[in-house]
Length: 239
Image (tube, rainbow, N blue to C red; front, top):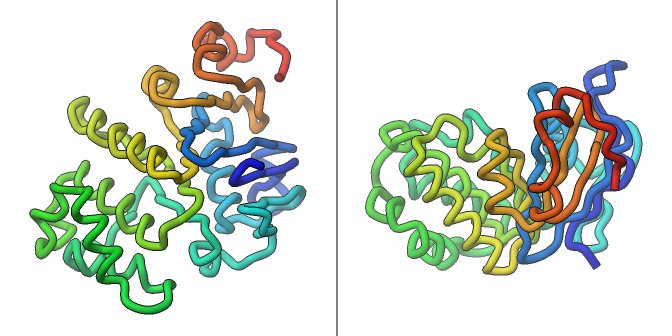
């Protein structure tokens, strides 16, 4: 059974629906990526999955647990973590304090989990007493991911984790994402860089105009004329 199942999700702002009847699954130890043109509803879907927007139709199931109507602040403790694209760290707090905040919803001491994470994110370990605002953009993104991992989630949703980063640090972020998946976590990534997404993913979903237009393995999606699909010029059937 997939770790997360989003079924028939429609959502938006007020009466204005941005996404319509979207379904997808995310498996443990796999990287599933959502790509598509600007305005396709990628980030809206991510925010809906993690409870920041209310789903007007459909359901979100994680490990058999229905999270559709669970308040957003309770969702991390139910196994679903989220890393937004912007404002994703507390800049006035140190790296270590950010991680402690990330583990706040867990019971008991978070020290052991924090040390495990810092042992993996070596750049952060070196800067553990530095304020997050003094980190590079790439390091801040890594800290945001590390903080989300403090709850030891079954699923982590990453919204544009490489946006604005140098090519070198983009590679570092994708290496960490691969490591997270290898550890057993199901990873869902919203990504603007289509080529990178396909290269690093197990499964790819192509959103166009608020719908899941086509999806498949990275090899299947890599063979499609995505430029035409993004522009609405393709008649590819939804799989």
